[in-house]
Figure 1 (cartoon, each protein chain N blue to C red):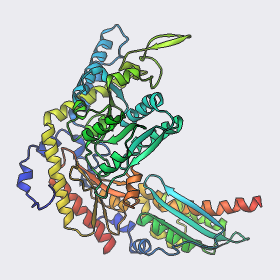
Figure 2 (figure 1 turned 90 degrees about the vertical axis):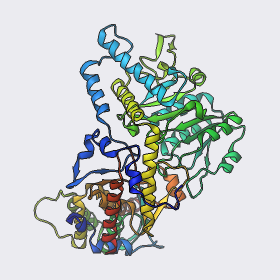
Figure 3 (figure 1 turned 180 degrees about the vertical axis):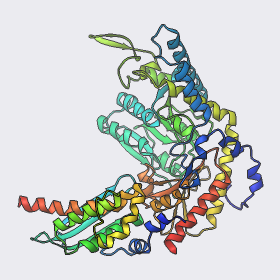
Figure 4 (figure 1 turned 30 degrees about the horizontal axis):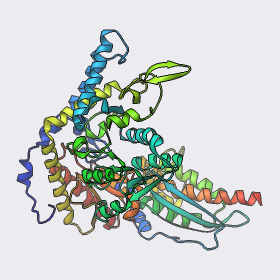
Length: 421
Length: 150
């Protein structure tokens, strides 16, 4: 898939996506930084937002806003309808069976903390094990460590190989009757690896464990289908998939959510409150204490529509072509080391240049208008695996073009010039 | 290429980052401290010998980081050897004011540290330039505390 390729600009140019037309929907991409046209390649950290999303937020606040689920007036009705309609769109986005299986959260981090705290506290016993892969983002490690400490259970690491793939034999070795939870990322943020979630879920279910999927990096690139994956929980963030910040979703299987205690207490999540005790609302409201993030849920729904309009096949093929081109360009340079060479990989190009620290690369390319991420990417165990303190990472979105990658490689030449004279 | 980049990555900086001076451990150190930049994962450990008159007799460091943080640590160790704790603290204040662009009045002579003044055009990199200094001050102040308790 990534070998014996020749650079075929025409093929890429005639692909299903025309980045030029898409860019018109993203005003921020016309920004000038340090006198240069912006090249935004930090999409895995957060993507930019199309006009459809920002206009939906404007429209919501201009004509629909009130609090939800409690007013008897017209605006409250409109807001409630907008919010619950967004939940329906989110349900379709992950192909859940029931709308009540979708909980709005602040983002993936909150989704994972909700499961760790509520499901974990309820289910984990001393001696139980939680399996977490070596390539997880800190947000899919730390919540498990916290709940393990509180419940006397234990977090164990599923190792990966040097290409950035989970070693499946090791995973099978680690799975046994004490395994209560398997928490894995669908797509690794620091490497781009796409993990075989369905297969890993089936093996976890064989020993009675539940599977929690971090889909933050998958949502912008892959069509997510929780029924096909058979996972028990899946969570993702709106802001990485062209939606607003501060909104994400948690999918949980109905019978699991029904059995779980609430995550936070407050308004909206109760049926009846007395000083002798309270009765909780049905799912999903049981997990949505307080006034929800109504406006951004509407923006989330618009982001889902934006992606459907382009189509997941077109998105995947466009980003794959950008990645292939990037890998081919990298092959021209013997001083570039790429991190993450899994055959199944999304649009992440993580690398280092011999003799130049990632931070210096980040600063130098920034002055050329090229935005990339440098650092440990909230994945310190991955950095430790490769014995580096930091890497540089370019990550792609639908609006990126071949020219953007050429601009990155031109900017990298500046780094070489400064360091090597 | 932009002038501010050339001012930041001067030859002296690249040279110090490639061949840091006073790099390594110091067996007889009587004060040490570790510094990390949690944002980027860079880490640095500083060892020094502070004598009874609070004069830095020797100072060495180990660690990894970007060109700015390594060069800053390297140049700092050259500058601090032979200085008193008070002189070290004063120099840091002057250096900090220079790299953050907050110096008042006429420019103070900060000697070789001048090569790092290009950092002021790159606010996100000030932490890289000051990591070694914060670590050094933590090291020499820790000794002070130990001395007092003794």
